Image 1 (cartoon, rainbow, N blue to C red):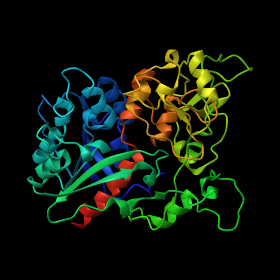
Image 2 (image 1 turned 30 degrees about the horizontal axis):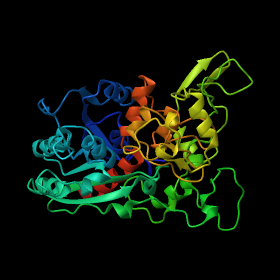
Image 3 (image 1 turned 135 degrees about the horizontal axis):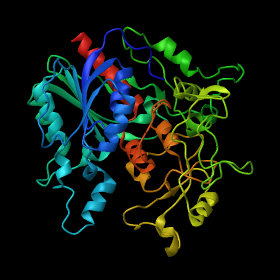
Image 4 (image 1 turned 180 degrees about the vertical axis):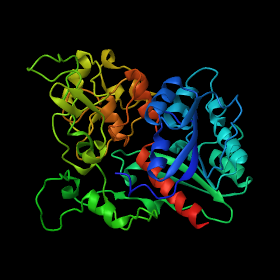
Length: 437
């Protein structure tokens, strides 16, 4: 689903706080060569190197180590510094602990390392992604954190603008609102991200219906994604979209993946297995076709077949499975509404922890909390939570993107990632400014 083919000439970028590589993946689709990436998390950089073997990816704490000297000029500095104290949940959790204060937590200062990288490498542009809560956060002096950050980059000679965007508007099958701060050299102006949206909220129930690739022609049929991309993009120049299609839904994103049963037996024909390593159905939507492009293959006695990675149901106890079965699609229970023995968390910290996703809507936001449990991301039709592969698709990682470590680490990496399709759109928008500047 990357918008158009790879541009003929690549720009260079670096990715700070790279995690598993969501930003890098999207920027590569947008025509950037990633010169260097860094993260402090060993498991995340293992995943990054697995999927970006040609990139120099280092594992280090860049808050205490020197930024490296690079052999080439850098066009774009990108990064999503982890700042959980800026999130609403993060602030609540910190403020609930004795001696902890979200306004003075050291993680609120990680953005400064991205500023230092901009000062060192003097790129044509930078982009920083963060939680929506940063836009309303204040520091311990009562000043706007966002305005302070923008001012720091303006002092380095950049025109700076910021937007709170919804990833669903950029083809990601998920309602995920994030803050993007973009700066360009002062003789240019940052692109207006709202002009680069490729998707929109459906206007009717008909538009919410999954757009199957094999459906027959009807009057006023919805333009397919392939037709839309072909008509509205140019491989040599990243053009703004001329029209937008309805949001991608959960069903469009994951309905082709094999059904699973927590605790299932691989050898049994009576119920689904707990894990699946191959596809049983062909892709039936444009998003699924895109997700399965260049999927890994494996040789067997019966020939080669596509290898499905990271599709394994996590264990759920009987109480959770019973609650999952009772929930209707798109509904959730507040923790405080449940009997005491079924409450897994404090009501004042997490208010809605059992949510069954709707097949005809984008998913709710996938966060790093999914590594602890999947209560907020229950499968629309199966009594279980999303697998790593399903969560990755919801984040717009294609199936060829493999998470090699533990399942817990993989969930955390998926939840922390910047959706590649969102990063691609931002990268393409910035490219137009750099190339026209």
